[in-house]
Image (cartoon, rainbow, N blue to C red; front, side, top):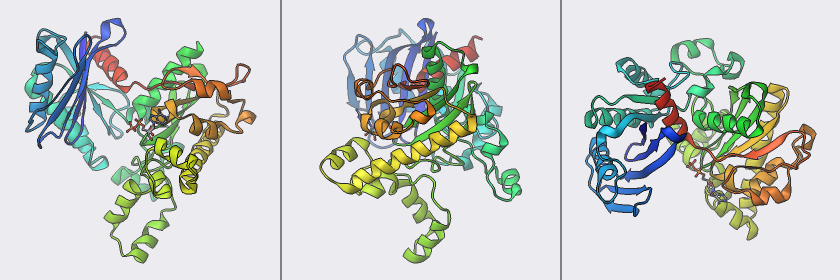
Length: 399
Ligand code: ADP
């Protein structure tokens, strides 16, 4: 079956067309940007010249029309007509407590996603716009919603409840939700496959490290804890996000610097993390280059990041009473040899022994980076959230 996977942002729309019959081949992919402004589209497809052009798109429905035009076009296309698309799978950021798995979209699902808008005000509205745009352009084609939060709905209360007055959980839904769920799910499953052992038997710690970073404790195939919380701001420090800090800092900063709560929140989300510490960049490649060049704050950013990830690994090993496999993914996890090295330094007491040569050799591909004799394994597994979305959608449409 041909499945169109859509990730809609406020002014962008990423897409991939999968053929799920052979396990999930990507037939075409691309990105519409600056929707509602001047508009730009990039598209690539198997055995076709890459296509890129300015293309005014007033709204997301026009972007979807442009995508269909490219997927069926004589020079750029991979399908004869729109009717070949069997279903559409959407990435939706927040499913609150409504969804613990992917679902087919209907009116009730739309209402629940709308109910979650206050929990993800920047993400759920454009996700809904994407769903509505596809319904307008491709009426009758089944649509599925795949949530970033769903995988973590298995967390026990002791992991998701904050120590706040209980009524805030009941009334305002304040709790840990966790994000990157589709990625944690994919790499944990894939790691079990590579290890040749049933996921039900394994305790896996997954580290998704990109511009945003989070860890998950995956026990017996289900998420039992994760580092992002009510929002993606909590947990380890990130490119521009502070991660967990003493909440009292907020009032102190507001008072001392005469800032509003909105300004402080902006600082915590956009000016903190690795960028804030280093003053150089939020990009971990730039930080490494600056650190090698002698910039001590860039070096500190790398070390503080690795330290916060390492502490979380320790916490999750304690939570699960062990860790059979530590899995790295995301732009940093898949590629950043120095960060992986810093994180894994001194983990041999947990049976996780890094092999320096393998760590250097494995970049952007699947592989083991622990020593052959390491009792537990350290692995790199490139993430593939779109594939999970495509396969979940296919399973919902033709169970
Ligand atoms: P996002 O969270 O936006 O999807 P990515 O997963 O692409 O981001 O991760 C971006 C981060 O990955 C950046 O900090 C970047 O420096 C790092 N990264 C990407 N490629 C490499 C590489 N080849 N070597 C080291 N770091 C890399």
